Image 1: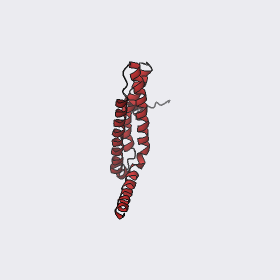
Image 2: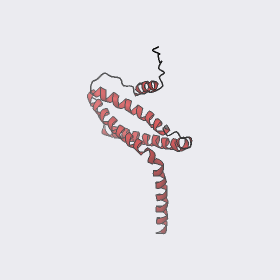
Image 3: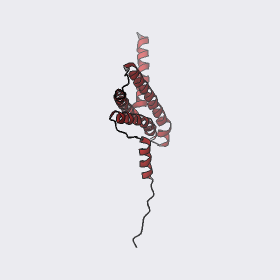
Image 4: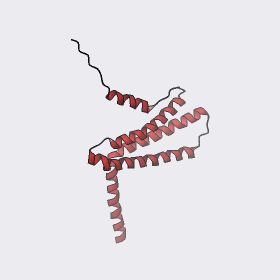
Length: 146
């Protein structure tokens, strides 16, 4: 009985530290789940539109693989946050890492959605982000009205 209490206590301490480690980025993990579900839905719809056979086992396996991959990315972002963001005061580093990862997923979602809707549009999330970042650092010439 005492061994069981010791194991439960050790597990509680470990899990509390682990969840404290993950707490700052829990919203990014939730966002990943939403993106996975959206990609699954639009991917299945686009496959039906192409006339492909939908294998449920393959779709579920790929979605679970994405969930595991995104969990690893969230853990990496947490590690980067505790390694660099806290000591060097760079709070956006983990968010930037996850935005890069989720940008790839957004490209896939948009491609599947537009294919399903028969809209011939190529969406490039990276081009959009690049234009916005360039706009932030754009140097504008000021003219004197004298």
